[in-house]
Structures are given as C-alpha cells and as structure tokens.
Length: 181
Image (cartoon, rainbow, N blue to C red; front, side, top):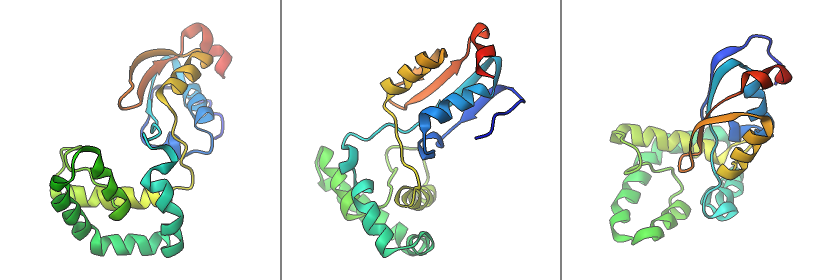
C-alpha cells in the first residue's frame, strides 16, 4: 500500500486484514494513516480452533477444482437456502461440538443462533461468506496475543481489545507519531 500524506482522526478497518498478504505490515500501515492522537479500530480473524483442519481449508482445494468463483456463486444462488434448511433441521439432533461435522458435509456458512439475522439475511450472508471462504486469495488470520505483541512493537497504545472477537481500538502516542511518517 502506498504511504499517505493525509492523516485521519479515525481509521476503521473491518474484515480486511486477514485477506492481505502480510497482515502485520497492513496493521502497521493503517496506523500510519492516523493523525496524532487519532484512533485506529480494526479486527482480524483469529485462527479457528481446528487450525488447518477447519472445513474451509480442507474443502477449499476441492471446491476450487469443482467450481469457479462464478459457478459456485450460481450454485449457491440456487441451493443455499435448501442447504441451510437441511443444516437447521439436523442441528437439533447433533450434540455440542459435533455440529461442526455439518461444515464438512454441507459447506455453507451458517450464522443461525450466532447473529440476529432474518432467514433471508442468513441465506444471503451464507452465500457471500461461503464464496469468500472458498476463493480467498489470502487467508492469514492472527492470534490475539500475536496482534497485541505487534501493537507493542509498533509503540501503539491499546485503548480497548476483545480477545473473543479479535477486535482492537488503538492510538499512537504523540511522541511516537513522528517516527511513523
């Protein structure tokens, strides 16, 4: 990313950093866009509990061999709602963590119970996030602790952070800001 001469009071970056080739460098760059005393608010996906055994990592190469971006989008336009309804019907019969098995059998993102969305929104988000997951050019999540360590290294002050959501609100102290330009 090019260096910017214009500085902002607020830099907000949501759902992007993990899709860059070098998230640590991207986090450094967005802090360079903040004016002295400005706020940087961002998130970055954390690695899932299963790491590279997560369904998206195992299924991505298979999906990419079977579909193009466009053909998967068309497939989901036609079948996403049916796939989700099957998942929703099966979930009550699966105990606890075994619900994750559905991610491998019916690989469509399912936010029911996780986000307050209407059924129409659940279907739309399912389609969009499934295509995003299966065709992401870069997929570089960072652990919460790694982000905190990076922020310390950059001299950033953490104003608020949520380890569950991997969300951060930071600022750069005035005395360090001149070193960032």
